[in-house]
Image (tube, rainbow, N blue to C red; front, top):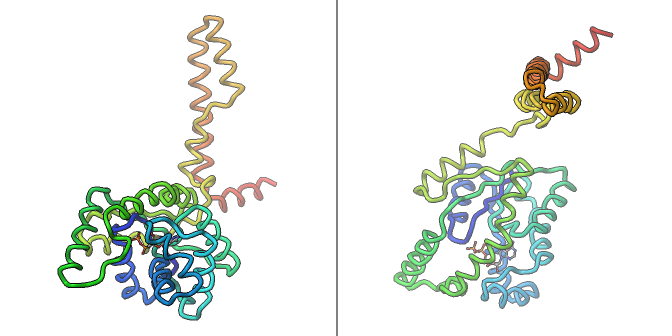
Length: 268
Ligand code: ADP
């Protein structure tokens, strides 16, 4: 299983990723953790990323993409993974599509944790207060002014991914404001829901809706009649066109592609 957790800082991606790790036995790939480890180890990537991260900005796409590309090649990623904090920009999402495509893999779902921003600030502030009380070291970028910049980076560079994955049909949204266990349950539910295998254009409802559209020729005839003042003729023409095409469309929509194919062969 391959999942993406999408949401602003403090949305609970890390917490939910741990739940999923325990539930599905797949690994969590957090680019934030990987970058922090690189900074700590003083690697060339870490040296490049340190200042950027401390400012709350995003590390360049090529740097992060290279880290992820390398990581998903490792044996423990074969069973699947949860991406937490990646992709964070549309070019990163494109790079991920290409990476997965090269291995013949695909994403099972992109789970958006939807939360409201005021609550996020409160959550992070209380996390910081709890860590301070325990005497734990804070993350450099958990300072209030940096946090605002991280949220701005999310709004500007990461939020467009919601539309990106909606277009791809992989987006699933859950309410990230609910208690942790409830959010975990909601994620399990949306992840278990299979994606539709039927291409959009052949789904019966879509076909029926399309069929209701009046063909251009009939529409033009009704318009001319209306212009000439032949109101009843115009109305009757439009109604006939609507009923006729809707019936035809509904009939067509009721038949599955396989039944349609068989019927066509029988006619031959
Ligand atoms: P959070 O989601 O709480 O903001 P992360 O731990 O995911 O924090 O990331 C911390 C920082 O690491 C980000 O602010 C950014 O500087 C950097 N980072 C992490 N992932 C990416 C990414 N995919 N692209 C660019 N920068 C990233």
